[in-house]
Length: 139
Image (cartoon, rainbow, N blue to C red):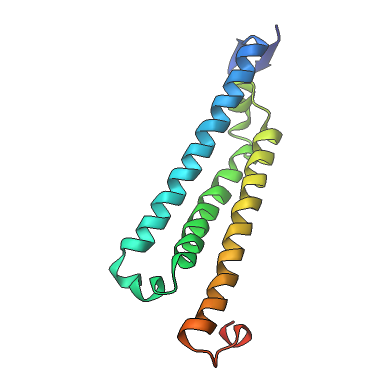
């Protein structure tokens, strides 16, 4: 059994419970990100001012939801590198670099979905709305 010392005191957690804690935090983080995606999707879909964009299809909804998630992920990504929060990571036996890496990899996946949806939006504007517009003119 390992005991870590930090400015908040010592905490003794068996390694099998620590593994379960890490799995639980990863599950909660994934659930939170899924809820943010669902919220962003329906916020875009139900907003009456943005109905013109919604004519392009679900790619706009996905790109806007992924953009919202990227904004939240970027703000959460800074937490592990803040000096104020580091004692809390050690208190709960979390490695800040692993948390930072998990968030960075989830941001990579979200940014890939976001970028792909934007390319699909360019294609759909060209095909459905105005064939004279090329993707280069849209940028």
